[in-house]
Length: 151
Image 1 (cartoon, rainbow, N blue to C red):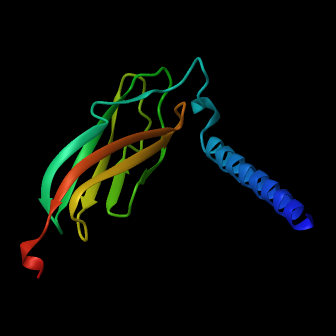
Image 2 (cartoon, rainbow, N blue to C red; image 1 turned 30 degrees about the horizontal axis):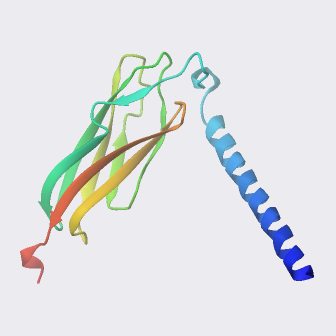
Image 3 (spheres, rainbow, N blue to C red; image 1 turned 180 degrees about the horizontal axis):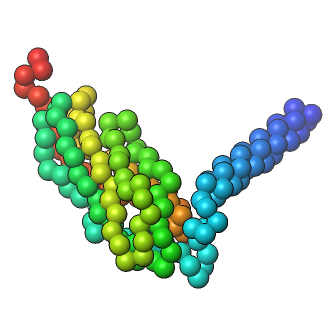
């Protein structure tokens, strides 16, 4: 019985400590946004992609391909991209570093390296911005054909 009680108490302690770390992480991201760019229900940027999901066709294993996702800020506050993360190391993102004013356009450019990949592949790229919610995700699909010369 004591062992069971210890496990239950340990579980709740661990669960509550995880929640605190998530809150700290969220606060750190919020603090990275200057006060005049922090969104509110009345004033916020809105990242709207022309094509949030694209099919890039076929490439041969070992080749790279580049694609640029274009978006428009359809909100009423300047949009700031804080960071962009790809779902794996095979995809390298670059993005608009300057503020994207309301009504203006920005971009996220991705370079996909197919080395070591084969078959149908789907990758996601998430931009963390001063939007509500902060995460904005795009995706691409591609088919990687085997390299006949790699034997």
